[in-house]
Image (cartoon, rainbow over all chains, first blue to last red):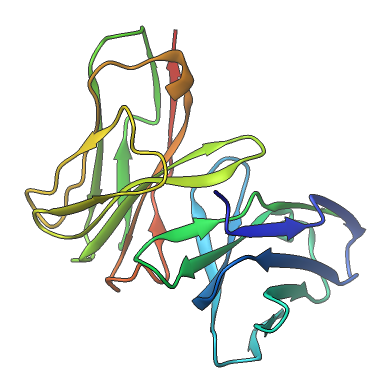
Length: 111
Length: 113
């Protein structure tokens, strides 16, 4: 069963705008990760946030984590056409060494 | 260059014909894992390995086998492929035994006719 679920399923914005994607999960976690996938290629790790952290930044990326609501958000600021990709959240369930991915958000940035 | 190498990139086969998808990493990672990706379902874990000779089932292990005889290699074996195993497969590795910060291969698109 899927642990993380992204919202929205698809997002289309203009270059320069901000993009926000959300992830909800069901069970307690140790950490939550965000990955990017370009057109059927391998996923690339973007950022990891631990359960005791509330916010983390990496370049134009900002991730928040609300463990009380079991949700996370990924904000990409000043988006570029090259940000067009699918974005996945992944959580490690407390019960093991499995990393569980959501179905992803497809982001399209129009130039 | 640090990388996870999967072969082949594309594979078309017929039902019942045994096949192996190879995976190799050059980062001396302990943790390796196989995923399959299907539209609308995201990535689902097939098997993972936390070290040599240590493997465990993921969420969808039925119809698959793996082995970890060497640290760098983690082949995925389909003894008798069926059409429902048509999918995009990814191998991944991590220096962390809990699978944090996975490095992914480029994927293997498998079609079983």
